[in-house]
Image 1: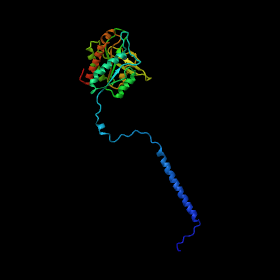
Image 2 (image 1 turned 135 degrees about the vertical axis):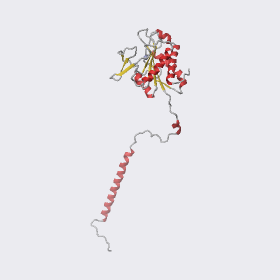
Image 3 (image 1 turned 120 degrees about the vertical axis):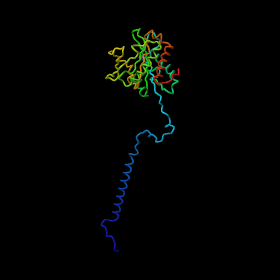
Image 4 (image 1 turned 45 degrees about the horizontal axis):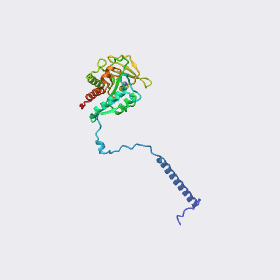
Length: 287
Ligand SMILES: [Zn+2]
């Protein structure tokens, strides 16, 4: 035999055993690597919202966007906060404003297709001025209308006031436009108009504690140095849209109460507000 292999010094069975051992180690290593690599994948995947589907149903795409302007009505006070009270009136400021707002909602109902009307709080509940303003901002309201009654220790104080967002603020122009329309409407009821033209301004400065608003009243008739920590007018500062706060009449005035503190008076003021809203939003009056 020419090609006879030279006899090895190591017996064949030892070599076979070594090869088998190496193969076993290799197999074990590969198996181990596979298991190691697999385990992280078995961990629960982080929760994710479903990705938006690439193909939304056709009907959904064709739904027209709601482009109605949004009016936010704010009946002042409410719940644990009655607002102003009077020896001469059975109802509180909060109750009267709620009644007038409900009448206004009825008048606006026929315009539902062209104007979205929302309220800043549930009936008979309290909301802070910040919550009311946030409700308007969250909805992207186009106008904020806050209803109040005035009160004064002097019983002869009487008449109507409207507070638009003041000069220097981004929403001033349209706020003033609404205020001027409303004064014109209210004058027709015969109620006294306070000050030179019924329009008053309040400026606000947030205090360091972030909770209190400082109010500076400044108009033709008001004292610019008069300060108060009443947060009431903070709605205009924070609602993010044009708006007015209306002091409809004095709950402390016998003259005002005679004229307004009855169903006819409530309806008359609701009509003034309704007509002003129609003119501002260019809606055709229906009632
Ligand atoms: Zn009030």
